[in-house]
Amino acid sequence: MTARIGVVTFPGSLDDRDAQRAVRLAGAEPVALWHGTPDLQGVDAVVLPGGFSYGDYLRAGAIAALAPVMGEIRDAAERGMPVLGICNGFQMLVEAHLLPGGLIRNAHQQFIRRDQRLAVENTSTAWTGAFDEGQEIVIPLKNADGGYIADAETLARIEGEGQVVFRYQGVNPNGSVNDIAGVTNERGNVVGLMPHPEHAVEPGFGPATAAAMRSGVDGRAFFDSVLQALSRAAA
Image 1 (tube, helix red, strand yellow):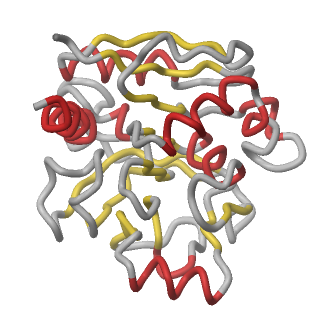
Image 2 (cartoon, helix red, strand yellow):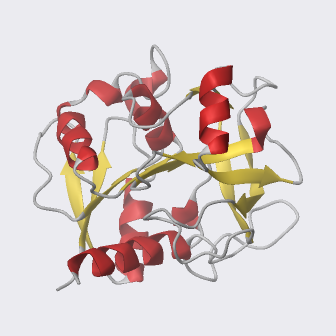
């Protein structure tokens, strides 16, 4: 049976259609979900896409974290459903307390876009099983509020328990502590990261020039990973 992966649209979402396309290219069925409807339509996993939900008022992701659909996502995540938060979706997950830490304005106070090198630190999550530990990947990054922060106790815990999933390589683009680009919950079914894997799932897009992002497929493994995880769970 084809896996069904929900992609939630919020007011201000920009990358929901891109996430749906990535799901489709991986061989799953994308299911469009609406922020104001507390119904996950029986999906097997959920993606919270990038954008500027509710205009990033209060804090990025803070209002979206209170949307009706988020209560259902919180309950489903606690039952073990895989959930991926990309950029603004990552911000929603920390605001909803489904992931540790928080995200603040970039250290240089500017919006940034670049092809970003990442090191894969944890391959035991539902979204990273198709990677190799220590593998370096390149996927697009675009954000203004991507600085990952955590208090000393939280930071020591997530570092000690292997909850850091990705680290920035080459350059830390936003001032994130310990070069952290993405984290997971203790169970490993919820993952959030600032870069955009849905923009690196097929060749021939994003011209490889000095002025623009390269073509690449390093993001495809996120979606392959969750399908593998769902297949194992169903076996």
